[in-house]
Amino acid sequence: MQKFIVNGGRRLRGELALQGSKNSALPIMAASLLCGEDCVLKNCPELTDVYAASRILNCVGCKCSFSDNTAVISSGEITANTIPEELMREMRSSIIFLGAMLGRTGECTVCCPGGCELGPRPIDMHLAALRKMGTDIKESYGRIICRVPEKAHGARISLPFPSVGATENIILFAVTAEGETVINNAAREPEICDLCGFLRCCGAEISGDGESSIVIRGKEKLHGCEYSIMPDRIAGATYLCMAAATKGEIILTNACVDAMEPFLSVLEQTGCSIYTAEKRIFLRSGARLKAVNDRIRTMPHPGFPTDAQAVLMAALVTAEGTSVFEENIFDCRYRHTDALVKMGADVQVLGKIAVIKGVNRLYGANVEATDLRGGAAVTAAALAAEGVTEISSISHIDRGYERLEDAVSRLGGSIKRVYTNSTSTC
Ligand code: UD1
Image (spheres, rainbow, N blue to C red):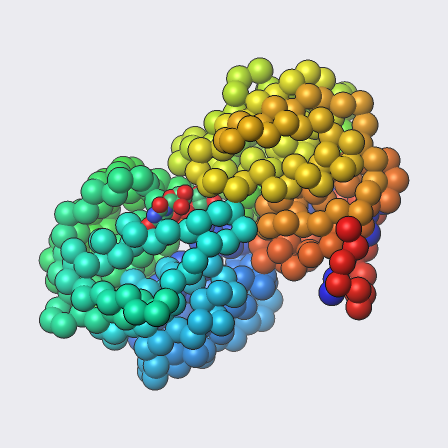
């Protein structure tokens, strides 16, 4: 078991190059299954979720190698069409392999992803769309057995909610299906555009990504390509919140400024000075932060991202005044608040609302990372707190942040990864 030991109270200062995006890398790795040739993915973050995705690719017959943030995926031969339960459970978003596997082999068996640390993770929209495009789906004892009896065909699909994963699965299935697919009320997240950018490089015909209606014209065959994965806007939001919380001053390079705009416009309301230039974001936070006056509502892009809710909260717990969050995407996305309260924060949660009354200071404590972004939020709070914080269950953090402790240390924070045999620290 590993823990972070954080000695708080140091301002973060300096320059940091942003890692590649986890939420782009995963669907793009799934997409490379469709090519049958080598795909070279640059700026690929080295994360446990990315390694879990490569294990899924390996188990269906692909070869993956990593070096210096470049992944090479060879999908010449697919040798299996079942994704074992342990790999599905390792990473909830493994369901995005379903559309790509069906597109490539016409058959795929996965297990129900079930609930996760954010609450129930239903896949009804994914399955309804795949059915509409010609897939027979049987659910039996927790397994989902999918088969395309004839050629997959395009369809008009209107999503009841702009689900990121469902939009990705439909795109992945549609790029090699016969005819045209139209997705109405599609997710507009920047990572969807990155996936489509990659698929276009492989020969796919897609238009409208980044808007609510995406049109895909299926192609017989795709080919391999070399592609650079976009920077991670949520890791960017995290490091900016850490700097804001510690009254620091940082420059993010390799940043996706436009994709981060919905987050930056809210962060700016805390009184931080934020300047952007091409691929660079500068933040200075000299004085005490101010609470955000308007309710911070998490919404699908271009709304405020749910993935940045926890890290912004960590900065706002010591701001002057009261901030209010409304979490509209996931049911259980306030699990980090217990740790913040243990460190001295004043946070009240009622259903989808969290009310944060700014306190003067936080104090170090023994706390747990309950999920990926919640873990990052607790780390941000620990960096701002007086004294030492021990954070357990940091494997959640490793799913999405590339060597977080190295990035924070480069910015002057005091954080150490330690290895321990104990099973609990709280
Ligand atoms: C993706 C991101 C995740 C982010 C989320 C929302 C990846 C790997 N993960 O997750 O970091 O927080 O988008 O921006 O990219 N839903 C259904 N039925 C479905 C599908 C979804 O009810 O068939 C619901 C979910 O339970 C959730 C909401 O829709 O309440 C949004 O989920 P979705 O956009 O699908 O998120 P993910 O793709 O799982």
